[in-house]
Length: 257
Ligand SMILES: [Zn+2]
Image (tube, rainbow, N blue to C red; front, top):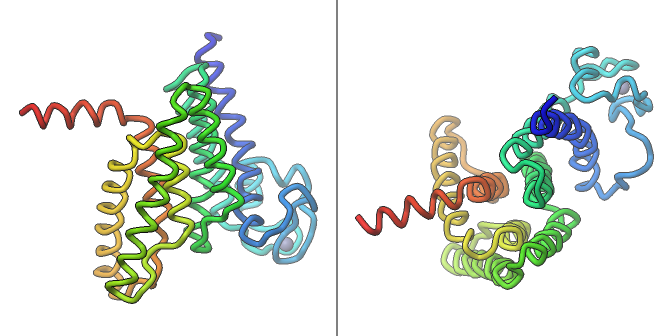
């Protein structure tokens, strides 16, 4: 087998396994339970989950989404995150090949998937993920020789959102964003440097506003006071990470006319 294909397949497989571990993190980190022990249990009947019922994707399909002992439904989020993680890892391996950039991409994208799911389920972006994420981002940037851009990115990311939130509070008397959003933008700045921030802020706000308005129109419900903004930040961050160079060139082309 050619080495590139092997890398993609192996990454996809490890991504599936890491997705299984990510499910444990997504479930336990907001509850502040250890992610190492005890072993996974069914949340409904407390029955310990055997290894053969814990195989990524396959077990969920075999069990038809139900606990083996009590029949309680198992959320589609479990196989979904495993699949997303497997596909992401395979895709990143295909794009970056065997390189330091691949490791950085795997760490960043995996953290962003976990943060996205936790934000959607609980409205939180736990420090337990964003702080190590900021540290990892700075470390990778140091390794790649642009630590200075990364430090400016982390500080500016936090400061810009902090300022926006304070102004929003001042003018509307409401909290618009959470501190988790500031830290997530700091994390993206640490991974990709301050150059990523204008695009990430612009794209996430634009998509967030469009999706938010559509949601209100379609459901005729009032938006929650705090909309989960993490998923938009995460998506904009990944777009910049993968295609930022191209976006810059396109933009420069527009300016030149
Ligand atoms: Zn059960």
